[in-house]
Length: 297
Ligand SMILES: [Cu+2]
Image 1 (cartoon, rainbow, N blue to C red):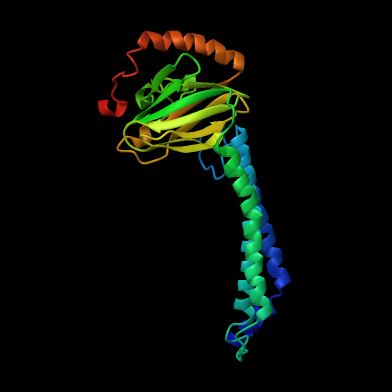
Image 2: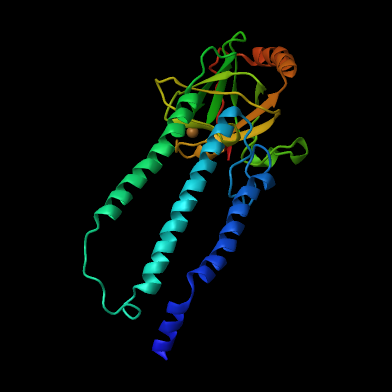
C-alpha cells in the first residue's frame, strides 16, 4: 500500500503539478494588481493589500520599482519552489533509496554565485536612481516646512509671507462624514498645496522624533529635533491625501494625522489670500498654546 502511494507520487508528472500551480499564481498576481483599483484615493480602505493609488511623480517611481521587484521575486520563488518539489518528490528515501555520494560540482557552484550577483546588479541600478531622484529637487517652485509636535503638526509656507498654522486631528465626536471627514485622519487645519508644482518639503520636530508620511504622495521622512530633513513632491492630481505620523512619538502618536488638499494653482492662490487672513487673525507669534484633543478626553 505504502509502496503503491510512493509510486503514485513519483509518477505525478511535473507538468500536472505546474499546470495546477500556474493558475493559482495567476489569480494571486491578478489580485495584487487589482487591489489598487479598489482603493480609495489618498486614504486606506478595508481589505487593501496594495499601495494607495499614486498621486505624485515620487509615488509613481516607487510603485514602478516595487512592481519590478515583484516580478523578480516571483520568479525566484517559483524557481526555488520547483527545485524543492523535485527534491521532495524524486529524492526522498523511498523514491531514491541509494543516494549519490558526490559533494562538489564546480559548474553549479559558480552559477549559483554569479547569478545572484547579476540579479542584485539588475536591482541596484534602478534602486539608486530612485533614491537619488526622490531625495531632493533643485530649484523648487515653493517650500512647505513641517514641524512635528507632541501630538500635532505645524505647517509653514516660507515663500508666502511665512504663513503658518497648527493642525490637529478632528476628534471622533466632531467628525462630519457629509464634509468628507474621515475618522482618525481628518484635521482642523488642512494643508493646501498646488498640483503640478515642485514642492520642497522641509521636515523637523520640536520635541521628540516624529515622521511625516503621506502614502499616496510617496513621502515618508523622519522629523528630528534640531535637524532639517528635506524631500520633495510634485502632486499629479487634485484630491485629498491623508497621512499619519510614522514614528512612535508618545501616547497620542496615532492621533496626529496629516491631511493635504491638492488644488489647481489658481485655487491655491485664492486659498493663500483667505488663509493669510484667517491665520493672521489667530496669530499669537507662532506660539499658540493648544492641547492635543486627547488631553481633553
Ligand atoms: Cu508623532
